[in-house]
Length: 361
Image (tube, rainbow, N blue to C red; front, side, top):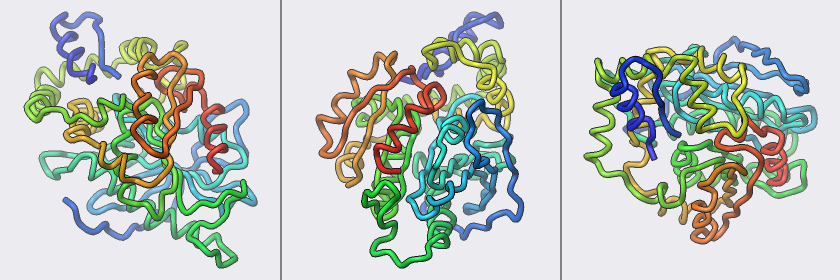
């Protein structure tokens, strides 16, 4: 499952020539302080919507965090918001969602937070595990909960002019909704699952795009394996050499074309990964690729959370058949397939937007 650990070792074994690369605490939250200034991100798009994507900031505990925000289109201010959880990997952060956000015209409010330790290029704080310990996936969940409770919901309430019978009432599509739609990409499925389980009043739907198989999500990785993986990735010599290789544009392109894209990746993708491929951004990648998010099973969370769930696979993804148990084991879960391989919101943003609209958002 964790190709990075295996392939990092392979890179080192072949020496410094070309090689293969990666595969595919509790406590009350601090009150959020919204930055007085928001940065407008002028992403190029041939058919971008009129609403611009803004980079904004908030505080969670001791961290200064960032998120991308696209305000609701006129007439959709009262509709339920969408929360997007980006994948974790070399060069990745909330920018992963920019094509989907751009593609959604006539949209409700959309928020794409940078997880703790990510978004360094956006100005978010780096995470130093030697100074502050984190629990996975709990700490990332808590960071998103702070955004939801202190920014998303207050912003939504402020947009209201009528007293509605429920927290979110009836959305523009005429469907009753009592909360946000959460979309989690790839291996960050445990974050979305745990977030839904803990917040049934504020989250009403969960979409998982290209998640791990049901077996992987419901099977804990042995502690000894997690420790071995993490120690290797954190190694100041071997780990550092491997990351220096893997952060090169050539290897990112090779990995992306081999494991992520059905067609070849584009320059925009490579340019964005270049920006975030810095030493300060390595620690969350080390934690994720060591397997720390899957230190336990999430089967109980899946079965006890009341939200309907949609599992989305790419047409080129051979793991789609192994996701069938999601539908077989869960009461309110459906499967669907759209064009693409493993980064569907980037490869096929309009198709993902269509699925969002079918859910009533």
